Image (cartoon, rainbow, N blue to C red; front, side, top):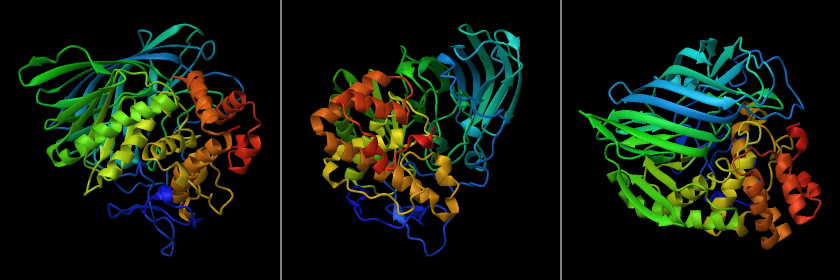
Length: 501
């Protein structure tokens, strides 16, 4: 069953099921609940997550900080130097990040997210350790609790630059996932300590969400050096600087990226590469022999997606995009300039092309136009699902009703779904955010007409490029561009500003 053609209202006492793969997610609903297929492009965990700690707070955060109109620390610039050991499956090295304190005077603390410490990774040998934390040249007091590093007892002046450095060690779990290793493939998504965001709510250190994305970071620069086996073929965010430096059986690679909010790597010594160019952008497909039948199709969908989405939403801003194939049941996963397509089992070519289009759609919605994926997941997933339907030529089939349970909104936070996990909340998350969300955006297109809709989307793109968007920002931008009061439309489609404010 193709979800994009699924038009009838269904009961949401369900947990998502990856029917095509024959792998079920953990059933937190009762045995009589209906199981359904996952939307194409949805990230599905490769192991059974434990949700019991999902609402635990790693640190006492001193309450909400409303109406400070802050978004920082600004302009983060990372320098990372690591050695990856393919025998121990560990990456060890140093990280330095320089940023501007645009938040408040005498900033007393900083937070970093350590996503590799999530329980779903730890139970398979994963984890992250941090030591030797230095702030502006002085040893700093810090502690780690679960997926959060807290650096405290600071006094950082407002509008001044500051630099944090640390030593870190990452153990990759043995699992087919966006973070882990399996056979010859090494997937390094969310693999380094990343600076948390401070906004009107204060510091954002929400827990890792294993059924989707919980990531939230500001655009900046990356200068990443990786030393590993010289036979490794590496795909990465950014572009490689020069040729790798060979020393014995090791090779050192250097990558630079700008205006990106994360940095990912994929390695496999058996990767082959197929390339093309579209709009002066190099598109690369990295694939193993067992996935060779998908290479040309993925290259075609990559080229066509960049051309189409650049025309409809705004120009793709980076010089390169890497598409990587790998084993795994999780579907697909997006990072700036790099998308992962998991191809366990015998996936149809059309499925792979559509998933690829969804993940490439995320280059616009999450990559270029950022958002808080934990608080407002619809702002990237619904838009990427719409983009995939646009690529597939199936916009007219996006006719999806919301769930019967009216407490699930399109603008709901992830915690609103996970709080009802035992009642089918995870299935409701997939259904509302991917299926109903893409249908809602298409309803807006039909209401406004193609010319006005895509013109407004391009204006939204220019306004929010490399920044962070909110539901209020999106609605305000569309209203201003079209000169129409769209609040009744959004209320009718369960998009409520009160869910975030």
